[in-house]
Length: 385
Ligand SMILES: [Zn+2]
Image 1 (cartoon, protein in one colour):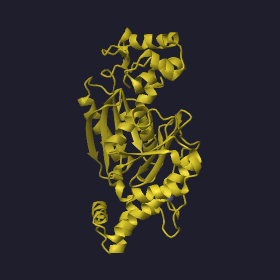
Image 2 (cartoon, rainbow, N blue to C red):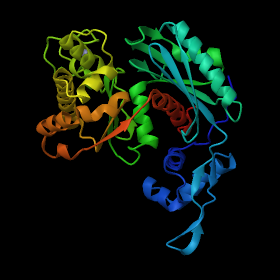
Image 3 (cartoon, rainbow, N blue to C red):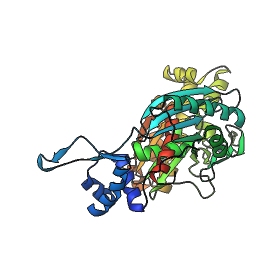
Image 4 (tube, rainbow, N blue to C red):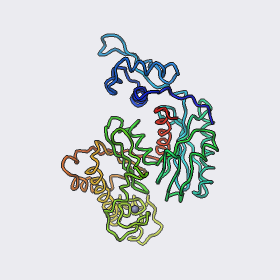
């Protein structure tokens, strides 16, 4: 295992200070004090060892408050000494991204797998890690994060159940660490994406946040009370399996009436295929048909929009997040179902729940991979890696 130099965050106060510099830097000491509620003396006490160890520096952009008084030197994280790999696993391909400590993506690598069995996927992940290490400016990887869909026990580093990959109880962290000699963090992909929006994205300043992902599946990550909800038993935010749909269709999970039976991209494609009697239609064909006003395709997107709107209302009524971010690969086609989604949401949102902000951010597989790297950054910034 690499002899990694830890970030000197030894108290809750220094964790809070470093995290604020990481997510909001360059940032002045006064702003850190305002955000964390800590005194200037405590901030100095936290920052001094971070600067001595070379993880924080005074930014070169000095400025004065309104052009008067002493110039202030905002604090920023030193980015060019720590490099992380993030890997997103899909059924037939893994996507890797190299980032610095500020989660800026520096390089991307993909590797296909002949099947989704653990041995074959680990081979692909090791290949990605080797290539990203080669491209790392330091010639090193300080940590590897892996994002997998399904039930993931992050603390144990075990993928307990991933229906998409057909995995059960795979000790992924242990196996990938043994192959790469690098510390590994394994997390559920939606939670990893939620953490990224919380630390570095549109949810940076939201006290509570829900990230809803729309694509092959429909998932939801929650940030509440200062942390990402893990679920006491490893499952939470599964809005794709809320029983809001008619019960005649069977879900990929084996149950009936799930939101995904109407609203996943697969459900939309299946519906248009059977209506048109064309089994070879792809999702892009279906987008195209809907844009040209084909009634079956338009109806399929309307039904999906209605279903997602109802699921969003259920989520917002139950949890009351300040912000909902809708993310995913097919969000670029969002206009096909946006009207029905918003109308159904408005119809079912209870009282002031309707004031919840809903924003869209398109995500690619590389963004999911970056989310995996952010999980490693979070552990380093918390002093646990
Ligand atoms: Zn289901």
